[in-house]
Image 1 (tube, helix red, strand yellow):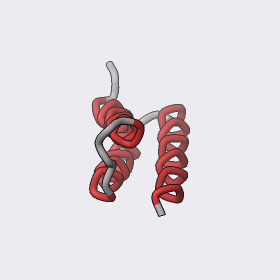
Image 2: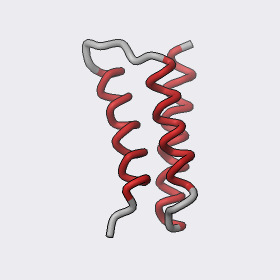
Image 3: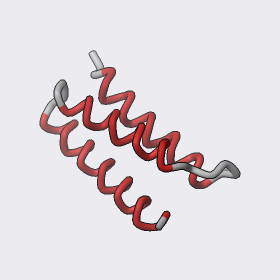
Length: 68
């Protein structure tokens, strides 16, 4: 059974990136929502999923640096 919190985090990052790459501007609120989804997922995920969450966090941090 897939971890729904993990899926939610991955989806939140994907939505953020789609906004960022599309015609809609991605806001700091969008970034925060994705980060909160990642933090929520850490509590109920496997070690492999934690590594993927860390990669998603790094992607968001890189995006955050480019937004400044």
